[in-house]
Amino acid sequence: MVTTKYVRDNIDKIRKSMEKRRSDYPLDELLKLDEDSRKIHTKIQDLQKQRNVGSREISELKKQGKKVNEDKVKELAEIGKKIQELENKTLEENKRIEELLWNMPNILDESVPYGKDDTENIELKRTQGIKKKEMSSDSEILEKLDLIDLEQAAKVSGARFYYLKGDLALLEQALIRFAIDRLTKKGYELIAPPLMLKKEYYRGSTALGDFEEALYKIADTTEVAGKEDYEKLEDELFLISTSEHAMAAYNAEKVFAGNELPKKYVAVTPCFRREAGSHGKDTKGIFRVHHFYKVEQYVITKPENSEEIFEEIMKNAEDLVKELELPYRIINICTGDIGTVAAKKYDIEVYMPGQDKFREIVSGSNCSDWQSLRLNIKYDEAGKRNYVHTLNCTGIATTRIILGIVENYLTKNNTIKIPSALVPYMNGKTEISGSKKV
Image (cartoon, rainbow, N blue to C red; front, side, top):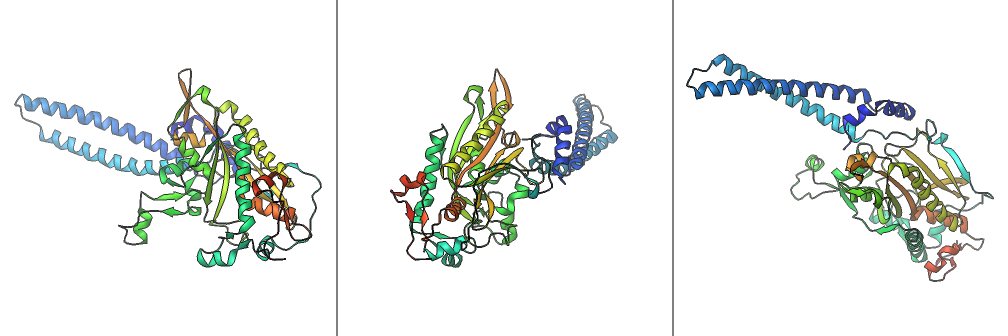
């Protein structure tokens, strides 16, 4: 995992990055704890040497049948107590150090724009000819066409769940197959990973201290008496919120030969999110939900090829949006909005004409060595081992793309035209009319 030596060796870059992030991460506390811990470790070693020398002297006296100095015995006992006290102290300090190291923000790439929040993200590209149109909300349109059922989903599962029906459910599957076909043709290996991860691997793939409240936990509660006991369980599992985390864990502890890289994957999974902290945001419809499907790109590469791969996965995602003929823009996420894990991040946002705004449908991140340091993922070249860089980018997030299609392809006759790229995956259908009229 990431060590305090790594922090000391990179302290200038880390401190500069923290300042750009306007981060309240307690870096000085980490450095002070590390300094104290190393001093205590030195004291323990010195005391252990004293105890070993004294123990050998007493052992030799006993072998020779000579009288042992009781004061010396007491002195050694006191040294033993002191060692135990110092070990207990460093144990507590090391727990805090470990916690801080696991959740330390990544070192930002120099190209990340400075900004306080999402209002200061930088637009890099925008398609032309974007026009607003008056229309009902997505959920209202889809409900009147009898293509979703939000009411029954809320009844049986709770808020932010949904039933997709008929051709809309088929559209979701079409989007998944469309993205898989396009990405596997570009050499990405298709993976269907586990949908749950152990805590030790989840915290290696994301800053669990920041993110845990957004995750669904599962544990064997057979022997658990109450809520307090449940929260103490060590063998709990987390439902994945994105396949990125499962793919990072898939490569944990691996050492790649240099000529094996880059390793390019396309993973397909449902994603589960509590959406904690998102109360009041997009509470209606299927934009911000607890469960959706996603096709995700994940790449492992050498550090020197990291930027090239980042541009590649973003272009792959852009190509998918282009082929669906959706209006979009690409934005460079600023320092105040980028999150803990990414060193650099772009989003692709699709224009929703009914809302007259761009909404995020793709997120791509260069995580540099943040995940590989924590999951011990390396490559070997000429007998020297170094940490890899990991990158991820959405291919298709189904519910959000569906809404982009609904808003941009709704006709005057209240049917939803199917993008031509998806027609082969829709059994030749060119539009969705639903079973009711708007």
